[in-house]
Length: 90
Image: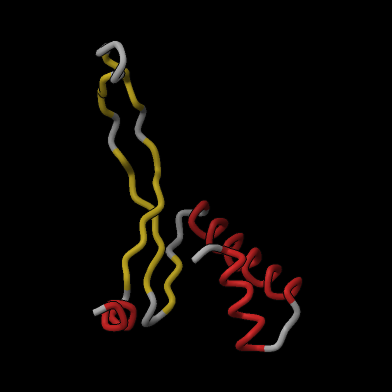
């Protein structure tokens, strides 16, 4: 499933227009991104929790040359599925 499939499903289930459904999805994704950027968590009970964590700095290798590359520490997004979502997938 991709974004267009999700928009079509929202249109079918709710009767809103495609443009409105697209704006709703964009707004939700934007809000989650801004929340994570501030360092807060975003949780939907039964679905899951979005949060950030810190990846430590490390040394990796360039696969072509084998030369070491320093990778700086950074914040990355994480998602943890909630009980409701886990039960649906079983």
